[in-house]
Length: 314
Image: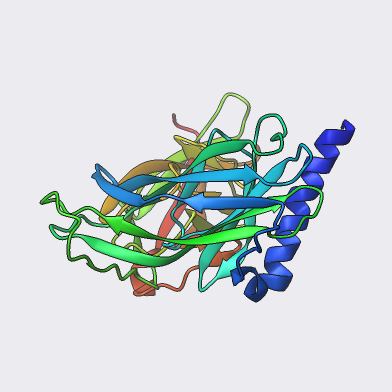
C-alpha cells in the first residue's frame, strides 16, 4: 500500500470512529473559517419498477490554503436506502442513527486544490409500494471530513421527497416505513430424493419460493438449514454468494414489496451414504440488516420441513 492510499484508508477509518463515538456533536455546523464546506441539493425519489429512486446532488469546497482529500458521511433519510456514490467511492457502514445507516465514503479523484469545488451524487433507492400521492422523509444529513483533520468540517440536512404516481410533489404525506419484516418460505414438495452421482456422492435440488410482503429495511434474506447428520448444502441455483455451513443467502439481494423469488436449494450427501430415508431438513428464512436479524411479523410461515431420501437409481 502506498502512503497516500494508506492515508485515505485512515480517513475512512477515522470518519467511522467519529460517527460511532461522537455522533451528537456532528450536528453543529462549521464556522466561517472551516477548512471545507458542503452543500446538498434536492433529493427527489421517482417511481421505478421496484420502488423509488433518486440522486442527491452534493458539492464540497476546499476552503483551506492547501490541497486536500476528503470523505463524506451520509445519514440516510430512509433506513436501508443508500445505494452508492457517483463518481464511485469506497463506502462502508459507519453506524446507525434511529436504524438509518451513516455511510462513510471516500471522495475519489485527485486532491482538491484551495478554493476548488467537487460535485458528487448520492443515490438512494427505497423498495416500497407506489403511492398516488407525494410523500416525504426527513432526517437525512451529509457531512464533509477533511483528510488531515479527520473531523467533520461542515454539514447540511436534507429530506427525501417521493413523487406520487400522479406526478405530484406537492402536499407530501409522511413516509412511514415498516419496522418488522414479513417474509415467507414455501416449497412445492414435502419430500426430496437425492440420486447417486458419478463420484459416489448423492445430490438433489429442492425448488423453493421466498416472498417479501413489507418494506422493512434489509440488506438481504438468508436461510438457515437444520440438516440430518452427514448432509450439507452445496449452494443454490442461481447462486450469487457462497453458502456457509448451515446458512445460505436468497439470490438477488434486497427484495421489494410483494416480490417473489423461486430458486433451487442444492443438497449433497457423501459417498457411502446408505440409500433410503435420510431424515428431515428444516429451512427458515429471515431478513438481515447489517449483522442483525430483522424482527418478523409472522414467524409461522418462515419455515418448512422436507423429508430426504437417497437412491442409486438416477
